[in-house]
Image (cartoon, each protein chain N blue to C red):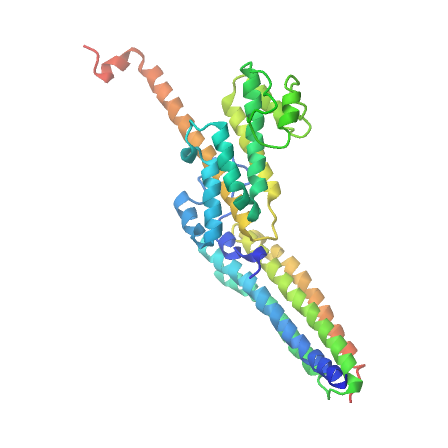
Length: 149
Length: 232
């Protein structure tokens, strides 16, 4: 039982990084494919499509920062806190990256034939990013309450 | 990649279709280029699209095809279309054609189809037969375009009727779109909308050619024989 609790503690420690990265992989792949498709149909503005498709990569960075904030000895006293905060923050980052990728793909698909809406079409992706930032910030705040040893 | 995003690159590479099919601008993508883009479809989806094309394109079916034979073709293709989630798109179109068949048959003075007769598609065939003498077969509220279609048919306005049916098909496909999805169904919706657009452009070109021919003949008047080489 003790081993299981410690394993969960380690999972919580690495969780935000791993889950955030998984989300970024999926999100960037979806948006990236949309950007590649749009390149075939547009004469200019290619850079901004590729740039937009990289938007879901920020969740990986948030995950790394949360992981370092949570980093402390994994003991019976710290495992429960590490698991709860780490995994929940990781799931939130994963979902925000995937859905942000969807928003970016839709934005690219719409903006390719109507470039003037490009700025506005990014708004939903930015809103999704905002919720990812909430999860990130409050994971940092709550991590301060997990025992150091 | 999930099914939901299977064709995100393909759909993003297709130009947006116009809001209305009746504009005068050229097709946003030519048939050859569209065909070239659709090469990225998987083999199963490619087969499904071909099955769909052979079901909808009269060039494949031939004008002499009987209703029974057509229904056999449909039943053969239906499981494949259902498996890939595009059957309902075809069914709506075929039901529209059935309603037009009913209007034309009644105008011709035909009696109501008998109970066992195979004459169309859709869940309302029996209802239509039972209400054969009602102006809109008792399905007017379900198909709001039917009243106008009947008007055009009664007053011999084939061009307006064609436009109405095309607009209705266009609207139906537009409603069926799901903007957050990039799957095969969305590819099929794009393809069907493109077909409607191409059909109207072609129809316009043919009509323009006929008008031009009529104007030339009228303008030439008696000189027609002179230019045809028959005059002495």
